[in-house]
Length: 118
Image 1: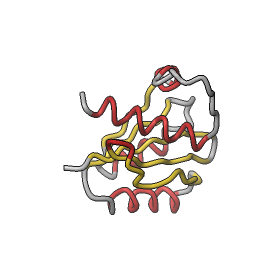
Image 2: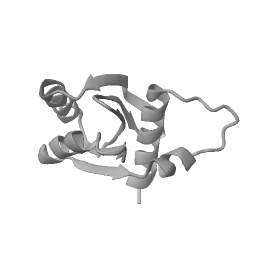
Image 3: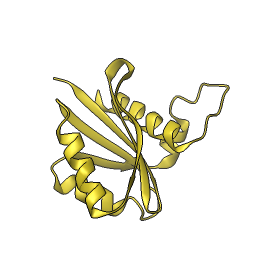
């Protein structure tokens, strides 16, 4: 069975989402969603349309992540919010420090693949 890793970098009012599979296969390049009910419903439908089990990880960012986490959980997905320090320290062996919402969403998805195997 395919495991889809959904990494979400949460900000106030919007999030950046990336979806990967093992071995770096990109299912969905990073894309932004606003935290409106319509956009969240569209995200849920998009994730449901992808074959395989999806696991969603997002950073625990204040309270901004809560509505999104709640809706994704109510839709039946495995959802967890992790301490941002875990994500920051994960795979921190690069000399280049690329910092962008897109890069963060991909890093969170890669982290999801790693912890999803355990």
